Image (cartoon, rainbow, N blue to C red; front, side, top):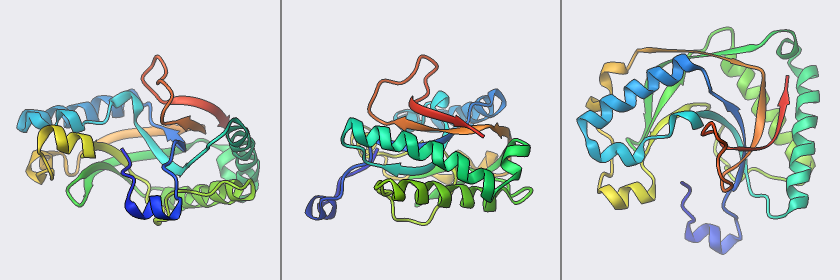
Length: 217
């Protein structure tokens, strides 16, 4: 969940409602991270509210606010253009599937626990180029990212949102709840494309976000 700050209201900055993502649907990864979540809930049942639904696992490439149907249409066109441009900038993305391997856990300020990406075959550099290209294509279409932070790809597993803190009173996630998985190999995710997803529309039957559009590399 994203919290709207006083700064956002004062500056007219809008809450993101769409994002470009790489879906992580590997059964191997799903099972491994479900086990992580179960271990953490066994250690503190209050964290159940903070668990990210396994079917919705993804890597976020860019977040944005799309206010109208026209905005959504431009976002779809931008995604197609991203795919074309990536073929020139990263030729190997077309010749073979990218493969993202996840191992070990990290955290952001003890409020988010995530699976780390193993930097094999320069995958982190490749993902940086993908994110840079996506933001460039969307900016050309007049759509800017609502997140100004440096791109840091990660697979969120547990997240303390404002709602979960309110419901449970848990304000930080103790590392001892997941330290046994600090170096676990969770599996590999072949990547064949990315999606423009809605944060607000009902999720698909498989539990993943509603896809406004999807392109294949």
